[in-house]
Image (cartoon, rainbow, N blue to C red):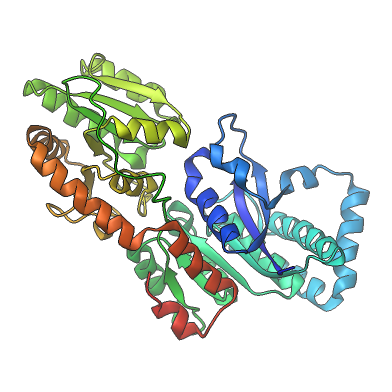
Amino acid sequence: MSERVIYVVRSWPRLSQTFIVNEVLALERLGVDLAIFSLVRSGETLVQPQVAGVRASVTYLQDLAGEPLSARARAAMGVFVLSPRRFLGTLLFSLARPGLAAGYGEKSTMACFADAVAVAAAATRMARGGEPASHVHAHFAHDPALVGLLAGRLLGLPFSFTAHARDLLQIPASSLAARAREAEAVVTCCEANADYIRSTVPAAGRPPVMVIHHGVELERFAPVPRVAVSEVPAITSIGRLVEKKGFEDLLRALATLRDREVDFRCRIYGEGPLQEQLSRLRDSLGLSEQVSLMGARDSDEVVAALASTDVFALTPTVTDDGDRDGIPNVLVEAMACALPVVTTAVGGIPELVENGVNGALVAPDDPAGVADALQQLLDDPSLRSRLGAAARIGVEDAYDVDKAARRLRDVFHPRTGAELETAPC
């Protein structure tokens, strides 16, 4: 049996983190044996259908933290006995660095140490059962990466992590550097993030920084004949209803289209803390007949929605605290379906969308510019077809989930650092 990779995530499964589920499934198709450790339960009732295909075991550290103190003490003793030197060294490392948990995150350094002990105890039991672990990988640079770092130290295993957006940008530079120094590689989804990591983490001791795009299932998200529900062109947008997704700008752009007497209907899929606020804004703009807030839907319904869409729109922004997207996976999914997209030049999006070539790219915080781009596409079916075809070709080349999984497998079974960092995406 192949050695296991320990996968540490913030919560499992999250509806908005389909890219992690897809990555896990692709790795398993390559024969990588995974054990998932989730800091907390997601608390969501709607689950992506593909989660049922995951073979990896899932352990919720939240549940283990609720076990009797005697049980947790026995587990810690088992890790201590495994290597007293590593245990005490990791404990002292944690005690001496309370600031490692500063910034974005919910756990203290010592709480992350306790979770890491639980991961190490479970991995020790797996090894005794003939399923030893060979690597620790964490998704997100805040709490999960710190737990993964400490678990790797306790177990004497190599460690790596994937950094995404807020988790990367809203932890102190010193904390990011500390995590990177302990890692075999730092993975991220776009060059903008990679540039930030390289500019923030000193070159001395910095591991390879790898850009591995979030891949999509190209057979599932594929071009289909557009289903015309009515003669009115359809716009679709998908995302969590949070500030950085820019839905307020999109609604204001749609109001401009309505004022120009452009026919359209728009469906916005997603849920989040701004749901009521956006609903009120929609109504105050007089868009209740044209715009439907559809709530959260699983990926099967997303595929169906994209099949009856003429234009996909997502208008991210940079929030006052610096939060922003990397490359939103829904943009890649829409483009894989050969849809023309209207989006904004935020984070890594300009790496995906080239204005006038495979989509329309607008400056952020510019509802009028978004309205202009939408109107141009709604008025010109041939332009929609041309941009959509180019979008599909670009996604096939750089966003195949199986190609991405093969590169990530190289992190778990590394070549040289130079080969890792320069390997093609």
